[in-house]
Each structure stands twice: as C-alpha cells, then as structure tokens.
Length: 271
Ligand code: SF4
Ligand code: SF4
Ligand code: SF4
Image (cartoon, rainbow, N blue to C red; front, top):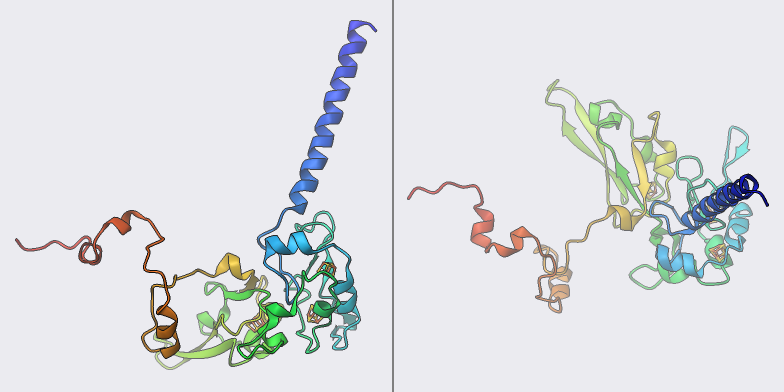
C-alpha cells in the first residue's frame, strides 16, 4: 500500500468512527431520562420508569382504543405516543404533548392497567383513602406565565379554568380590582398543585399563540420546603412535624447566621 493510499484509508476510518460515535452518542442521549417528558397516569418516577418500561406500547394501544374519544374538527385527538428519534424523549417510551394531545383522564385508566411491568402502577394514582382514581394522577403540574396570560392584562378569558376536569379544585378564579381603571376586575386563574393532575387540558384550551399555561413534570417545577416548617393553621401538619428531623440539611451562607442576624441583615442600628 503506498503512503497516499494508506493516509486516505486512515482518514476514511477516522470519519466513519466519528459518524458512528455521533450516532451512538445521539442514541445514548435520546435514551437518557428526560426532565421535561410528560408520562401517562401512574408512571413511576422518571429514572425508575426508564428502567422498568420495556417499550412494548401496550399503554399507547389502550389509549388509542379508549372509550372517551375526543374529536376536534373531524379529527381524533391522540394522547399517548411512543417516542421516535427527534421526539426528545427516550426512544420507544410513551409520552404525551399537552398542547396538542392532553390526557383526557379516562375514569377506567386503561393505559395504566395495560402496562405489564408496573412502569405504570395504580400505586401512583391513590387518594388519601387508598382508592385508585384518575383524579389522584400526578402526571405534571400546570404553571401560568402571568406576562402572557391575557387575564393578567385585564381581559376576560377563563378558557383554562373552564377546560379543567378538576374545576374549582385544581384551578380557581381569583377576583382582583383593576387599579388602573378603578372600575373593572381582573379574573385571574390560580392553580392549586395538590389537586392538579397535569392532564394538560388547560394547556390545550389556552387561547394565546403559545400557551400561557403549561404542564411541567412535578419534580422539575415544584420546590420542597422541608419538614421543619409548620402550617400553624393546619392541625394535621402539626402532627406530621412531631417526627420531623431537627437536623438542618440546607447549608448556605445564611445557615451560618443566627436568626437575629438573619432577620436584620442590612439594617443600620443606632449605637
Ligand atoms: S387516561 Fe389519559 S393517557 Fe390514559 S388512556 Fe385515557 S387519555 Fe390516554
Ligand atoms: S405498557 Fe408499560 S412497559 Fe409497555 S410501553 Fe407502556 S409504560 Fe412501557
Ligand atoms: S393540568 Fe390544567 S386542566 Fe389538568 S387538572 Fe391541572 S389545572 Fe386542571
């Protein structure tokens, strides 16, 4: 083999290996747990879900054959899909896009009961009494962007509120005086996460060009106050805190301050 031929072959091999690397890299990337993917009702937490789902598609099939079909402009709205390359979700796993195909909250939850592995499990759809109900599903949580929600501008809307299957629980309307005009009222939608199932019907119904209310996976959006704070007005909360750890787990610059220093930061005292 002459030198030029040898160098050409080396360059071709390097290029092929780079392409293979990119393809494998993309495949691995596509199959990592994705933080923003919305899963069907009853899904395990995302990392466990990825390990447990065998990508069989039975939930998607059950969803397609559900009883409460929804037809818009003569076209049936699909909810669950199996992720394909480019869907930005681990390939072959079920997901939904709230804006175009929300979960219609079937009472019999056929997708969940079709799952053969427990990746979708009734355990994740139980209420306080231990009953399995779609109202207890936690697929995500609705979040409102006040800068683009026209109700915050003073315009009458309530489309999300009226679309919500958990109306007056998951989403309520709060009246506020419009101080600019002095005569009108704002009717502001407010989401209550404890009742929100993350079904996405509000996002589909939103009238703005890009939805002003969106569904996010709960672990992405919700914070956690920790066990050490008590809602003084809630007797159950006081009982809960009896067993709470007294250890401080959050360490920040502020943790080093004692409460008096903390409360009075920036205050100039007369000597
Ligand atoms: S509960 Fe939602 S995801 Fe499951 S079958 Fe019904 S519409 Fe589809
Ligand atoms: S039925 Fe269960 S295992 Fe099969 S694709 Fe759906 S979630 Fe995964
Ligand atoms: S996602 Fe929207 S429509 Fe569904 S329960 Fe929550 S607030 Fe209601």
